[in-house]
Image (cartoon, rainbow, N blue to C red; front, top):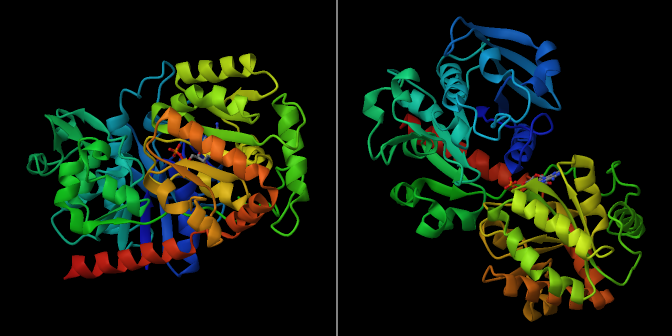
Length: 482
Ligand code: ADP
């Protein structure tokens, strides 16, 4: 089978969140199952050296105001198709935001262009390669099925994967003609959204199948609390919605071989984890104390991630004798809140504001537990890294967090299957109780190390989920051709 992935991020080249990890890893697992995946991405500056080593396969004289070409290249085990359009993508800084922190004024053109060219490749093929199916990811790829829909002639089917419904790509309806989309698609059952044009709604309306990144989030998306205004159309398509859990790249995230760590370790020998722990104490200015658990946060600092709740629960954490280390960036009040906490509780709390991939590995390697109090979490990856690194996830019971962590309640402990701590409702009080429960478990060192080893054994790779994607692709192709 041949599949074309269309996305706006891909690790390790360009990443703002979990979407990039998925696009960097899933194609490799699919290719192990004989699925030939090409990943289509914008030709950002971060991909320049990859593009320079590639071959031009398609030229477009004028793509929304400038020339463009599609370059085929191979890097990091992936077959890439890069849309080189300097007037749209050759910009420094964030891939989504300008220097003042606003969305780029022409994001509709940038990602509309990506979708239009992806649809052309899906229909016509490129350099003798023609996909059997397209998998479009998130709003930035949401118009691919719209362009396919308006094509007069056969097209491959399209699966849309929703990684986070909070980001929808909503623009003035006036862009419809500019993007070369037909008026017939702009209906309330189609891409119209309260008088505007929604890329994500177009994807939901016109794709053959819709997937999201966990079974619980798939159910949650149909409710007003989580659907963010799109619950109606998702309910209307409920028979075509599937939740498939994300996996992680087991080579990149492997405590036995992770050379970003000061020492590696395994389930059989956890000694190296102690060395990583001391390195965290040093980096974050904490006192050395093997008896006091270290909780970590590696996250975007946003409302979604519930980190305001953690600021409220922090006095209880410190009173309990535990420590906290935070790596993240995002909303100013949260950055300031954690910087302030590091001053107030110097020696017990440490904060580093920024994005630092190697440090994120050390956080997983050297912490005892990872806190993820998200208000919603489509899948979440950091709890999966936590499991793999024996860093016990303490998570809100929502979305993919609910699906991947087994709470250490009495029954789970008796059955020897607990891998972490879950809490609900998602409030500061309930988070503080979960932290307290985790500290109690940490003090029961025999139970704690059993739980660590069990967590490290928990399957977090792509194996099962890659099979699920492939089955779904096969069914979409059969139904599309029928
Ligand atoms: P989301 O996509 O909502 O941000 P996920 O848990 O799915 O959340 O994925 C977040 C990814 O980004 C993980 O790979 C995590 O390690 C990484 N990450 C988040 N913040 C940072 C940071 N400050 N430094 C390094 N990596 C980070």
